[in-house]
Length: 138
Image (tube, rainbow, N blue to C red; front, side, top):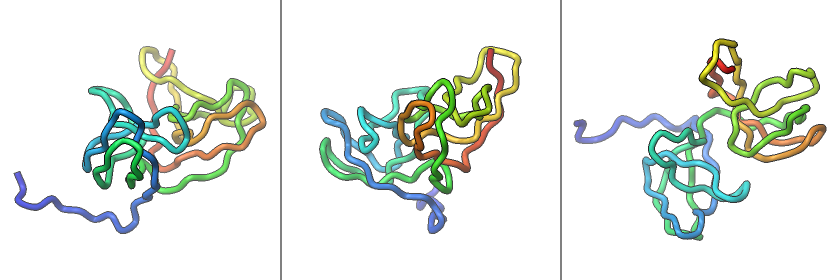
C-alpha cells in the first residue's frame, strides 16, 4: 500500500450535491444519485454509480463529487425517456437519447454517457459524457 496516493485531478469534473437524508458521504467511496437531481448517496456493493466522493459530509450537507466523465452536455430525450443515473444510447427511433440496460445478451450496445436528469421524449436533459462503454444487451 502506498504511503500517499497518487492524484492528478486538476482536469476532473467536480459537481456539488447534497448528501441524501439518513446517509453519509465518505471521501473516496463510489456514489450514485439519491432521490433528486441534486442528491447523492453511497453505492451498495456491486452498484454502478456516477462518481466518487471528493470530500466527506453528513446527511443534508453539501459534498463535492468527482464525476465519471469529462463534461455534461445538453441532449434531446428520445422515445423511451431518460432516467437520472441511467446509461444512455441513441434511441432506436433515431429521435434522441434513451435509457439502456446492458448485460445478459449478445447485441452490442454503444453507451454514450449517463443521464444527469430525468425527462420525457423531446425534453432536454444533461448527459455526462466521457465514460462511454460498449457492452452487450438482450
